[in-house]
Amino acid sequence: MDFNQIKETGSEYLFQNYGRMDLAFTHGEGCYLYSTDGTRYLDLVAGIAVNAIGYSHPLWVSAMQAQVARLAHVSNLYHIPEQAELASRIASVAPGDLKRTLFVNSGAEANEGALKVAVRYTGRGKVLSALGGFHGRTAASLGATGQEVYRNSFEPLISDAFQYYEFGNCEQIKEMVGPDTAAVMVEPIQGEGGVRTASTEFFKTVRDVCTDRGALMIADEVQTGMGRTGKWFGIENHDVVPDIITMAKGLGGGAPIGAVVTTDEISAVMTPGTHGTTFGGNPLVCASGNAVFTVMKEEHLVEHSHDIGARWMSELRAIGSEKIKEVRGNGLMIGIEMDSAETAAKVKAHCLSNGILVNVCHGTTVRLVPPLIINDVQKAMFNKALKECL
Image 1 (tube, rainbow, N blue to C red):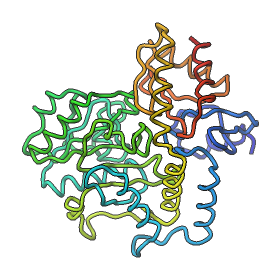
Image 2 (cartoon, rainbow, N blue to C red):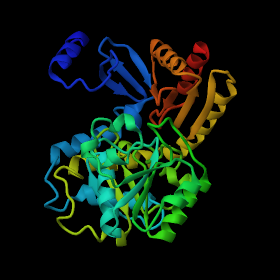
Image 3 (tube, rainbow, N blue to C red):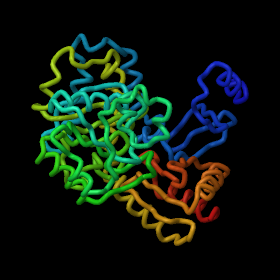
Image 4 (tube, rainbow, N blue to C red):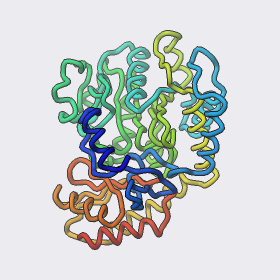
């Protein structure tokens, strides 16, 4: 089908719940996507921080082809070799004593699973999450999402278990965590909230208060994990070890996989029958995760994310335009807050006309979450387009 046929067919048969751009892609290679009319685009969105090793990486393609030819799915009624291998690889890079993994299908499911673990482990019924945060669109993860725009009209499905604190506010954490608090959820960087960061003092306060009062600290690493921030996990930028980490996005490099990672002790409360998933951790998606790990380690992409990201943010701050209010983030998760939503929209449109894909989140923030394989020439292409637009 050509683009018009794709658009017309989708308009007739799909839910119209996405505000889609007038683009469709046929294939990708490295950091580039190719549209139906043959135009090449430098992709600084990466499927919203998913395609960490870029498109069509030869090792990943080979691994997926081989796995499809052997076995795609069997269910968790049986032991799965690829799943065991991936769990061991996650444990090898996870901080502290986090070594047990439950595989699911998405970030929202990972957060749902983490909440169930926390409630069952503590025997408590309240969860604190941050205003401006985003944890998914299923019932409990939506409840944990501290943005009314996502919760509006779905209130009948949302539990009153959730309370919201101001991201970065240490005093609120000290005041709000009580004897009925099962967990405090926090993103190392608020992605959908505008690439918002908080101080190391804040994350250490969350850790200390949770420890002192018997609540669990859940780090939502769905967007920040797998090297995105220049560390394997974003929380490591603050030298804090949470009780539970949730993962997805970059873990599968394009395959739908999520994970809940915790300690031996905490995981032990999830006995057979307490939680499960048909597709979670099947051979195909775990083969994808194993391939992603191999590429990231062989090509030193975590270190590359740290180094090139630091240089990039320095270059963006040096532009010095009055239309740029702030540049924030870590590694290759960068937010450029513009002076208005209009300016942000103009930057996005100008980049598109110059063959560069960027994303605007929270209205005024141009978000850069490219494949971790991006190079200096490619980041310079964006810098040039941004300066031209400003």
